Length: 82
Image (cartoon, rainbow, N blue to C red):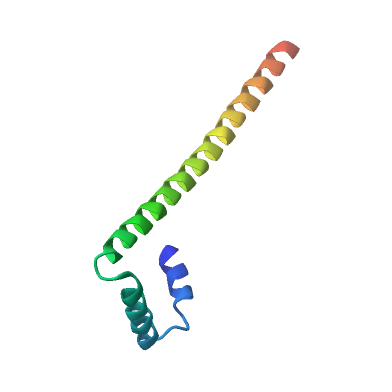
């Protein structure tokens, strides 16, 4: 899925345009700071993925807990009516 999203972003960009953009970035930031920028960007993306995964896990656990509570309430009502 992530690869498909990346391909959609690069659909209208040719190799020459990518090289041009890379050269401009190289001129602005210099060769020594580009690895630091890439590392910071990678760390930010990783933190974003971790936070997204944690939110998904929280939602799943809340739904699972809610499901368990609903089942136990129904069982309790059935036992009370017997």
